[in-house]
Image (cartoon, rainbow over all chains, first blue to last red; front, side, top):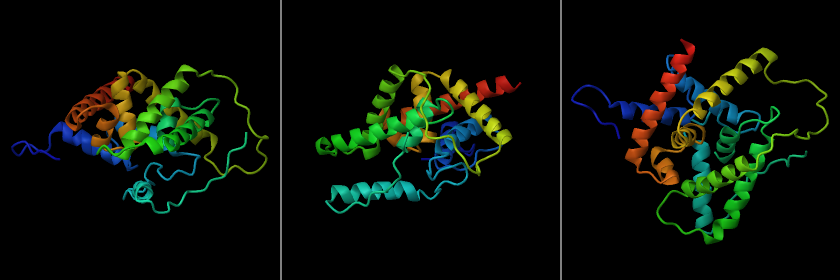
Length: 92
Length: 156
């Protein structure tokens, strides 16, 4: 949804949109953008210590994990068998 | 995505994500319980899930009591995690991010977390927050600009 502005490049809103899309995929932030670095750090921290695929720079940038999730929903809605990811119950 | 969202919204307590992870578990149970009543209205399934997550997080924030969290036995073995220096640097950076995000209006903060931490698209985020994709793009640009301004002011 990039809108070119008479040869002036993409609109600032589109640049922000593309940046947030990239950060949401776990891609590394631009070095010269402090806000992007902070958001990326927050995302990486939320992924840490959990076995969640999605740390900064290590995410399934191709959307693999997300597609698997959505495919699972599609299969469930179609009445098929949906594999469930197993996990070790946390004991406290 | 739900775990990341809950962790970003609720943060760590006593250095751990126990409470956020428990809330994420509650969200999953609530989603499963609500599934029989779910009707496809043409909106992404994620908006259904994050609508529930948003309410669960709000409930948790209202009833949060910052108290000691019981843990298993003390760890006894090699720790292959990051060293103390790296841990502290990460902690400072994340706390800095939380502090700046807390100064944003709630809808802008929620928007950025859904977009970056949960990895939702602008359209999906709009469905969760009841905004059009165009309104999301404008609001997220403003939120990012404001966050950038605050970060630059603090580092100056």
